[in-house]
Image (cartoon, rainbow, N blue to C red):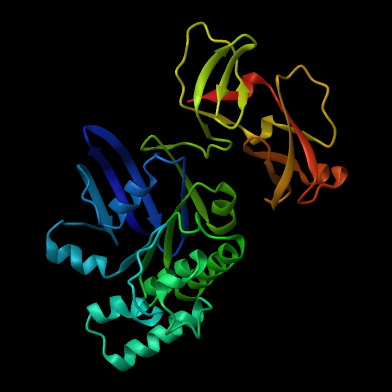
Length: 336
């Protein structure tokens, strides 16, 4: 059963169509990831789904009923939802008062409020932080306070907008664990945006890709932004961190993004003898097992995703920190 559904939704901002969603739905009780580059429309889509933004055109359905955008109808549905932002706003007061804010706004009694706040802080691993000043916390701790403030309201749908983009690895692991636990124990539907594909596939049950405000058929890996250049050595795509060689075109194409299929990139422990123009050295930063297929994250000029077999992983004896070489043809680079 779909808990959220969008039909024919568009949104125009400053004369530009920033969202164009013919059909999109979120199943009840799932964790759904929305991935895409910065500026692809992820935050706008989340704002429309959470009813914080009225679309220019189209309909939003919640639990099978079309949403009406009058104050009373919106307020009733929005009580079932809450959102955690990439950079949450915390009041300049204690942690417990920040977490209790939503409950007090709803008229919750002091005793119930105190118990719920204590439970929420315990759940996110911040018990004992009640009287700490919220604005004196680290970035990771601040994000956990924001998560506790959302969870204390027992939302039916929890929206997360790039929730771990500015959080250190230790707190990312804790944050992800809490989300998985809440989903399993409470059946909370979670919709999260992220530009981190490995996080999306690690944490969510289904993933949608957004590009220039539209949903695309398949997830685009190795999606880099930049500009095309003509050089004396041929055309390339300059990401700002490095250059990726592309196939010469009959006419100049002003692409702003490129993508490269992870299956089209060869990983080797030694430089690979090939006529392929794109050859980079790098270091393995993450190894993700996807049921017999392995997704490597390799930090080079950019961070590349590379798909290999479980057999290749064992044969090359790759671990996090291993030095590898990446090779792919110019024809494997898709201009967008």
